[in-house]
Image 1 (cartoon, rainbow, N blue to C red):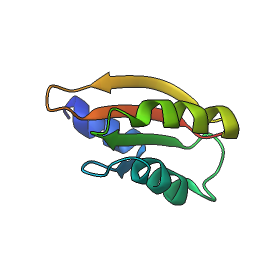
Image 2 (cartoon, rainbow, N blue to C red):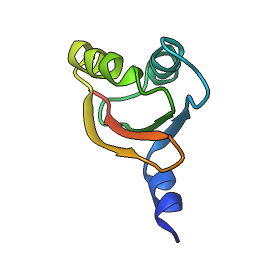
Image 3 (cartoon, helix red, strand yellow):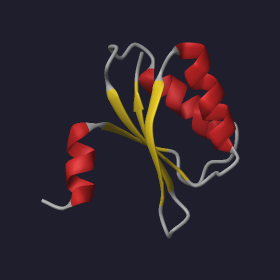
Image 4 (cartoon, rainbow, N blue to C red):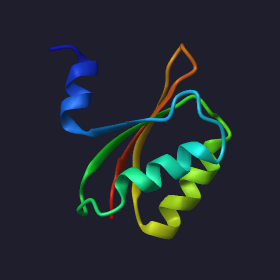
Length: 83
């Protein structure tokens, strides 16, 4: 199993690639609404301006950004643990 498959198995993936601010954060909020605390989310976006919005959302909700990986393709991959 490659690393990409392993990541997807461990977390719910939310793909916001191609969307521009504020749509990636709105998609994340909508798709995580009602999920239990501790749920792992793999959030994919190619909107670099959304990082600050994501950090603000996490401060407000108590969610935690576990890590951030920027890929050569321009995709930014976030691992988020829901509060």
